[in-house]
Amino acid sequence: MWALVDLILTLSGAQKDNRGLQLNGYQQHRKLAWIVTGALFALGILIGILSPKPTASTQIADPAPSAEAEPAAVEEPAEEALVDEAPQENAAAEEAPVAEEPAEEPAEEPAAVPAEDTAVEESVEEEPAAEEEAAEADVPAEYTSALTSAETYSDMMHMSKQGIFDQLTSEYGGQFTEDAAQYAVDNIDADWNYNALESAKTYQNEMAMSPAAIHDQLTSEYGGQFTTAQADYAIENLNG
Image 1: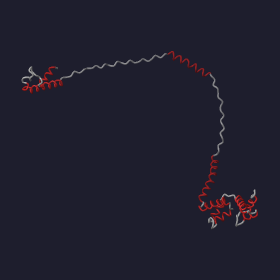
Image 2 (image 1 turned 60 degrees about the vertical axis):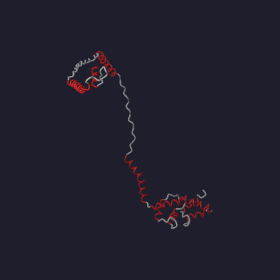
Image 3 (image 1 turned 90 degrees about the horizontal axis):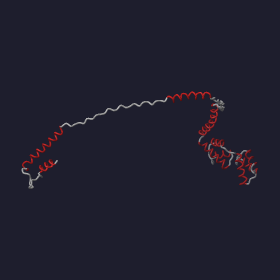
Image 4 (image 1 turned 180 degrees about the horizontal axis):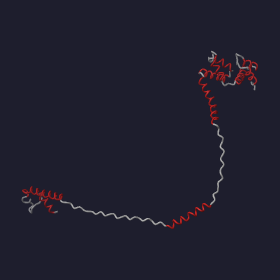
């Protein structure tokens, strides 16, 4: 190790003599010393590379054979005991009487309604509704308007059937055609007796008319235009 240190100091020029001066001949032989030192260093490396390296041999131990586990011995007396108990249990089961359960009587099923009868009932219910819808679809708009006006005359003014017809066809009234007016009075839902009675009350309360005069006014073609039967009903129930 110290020899290597001395060599490095010498090559670098740091080595001094006793007087503190450089070694004699250092400048002349410095280049040669570097060449020789480098050559020796390279030779050492080359020898180290080319020399064979020892290999460590390893021995692989053969695996020890695994010991097979021996099957556990089965105790024969236990099996014999189980075999002996099984016949006894079977014999006890055979000796025990089995109670017979009473058979349940089948429940009576309700009588089924024939499918044909149900279909007939449904068709009967559906036919009127379908006919009404078809009839309403075929009614012209003028007819439905006349019916609406007729309902207003009946509910608000308590007019008679003939009076409503005249009002619908009048040039100063609804100006509907006679066919539309006839459809309206035929399809209106009105109580003509009630209308006659309400008109009679109006004549009595607002015009102070007598029962005879009220009857004439109700049946007059220029008045209420109610039928005689309707006027009679109104007079009979006027003060009722």
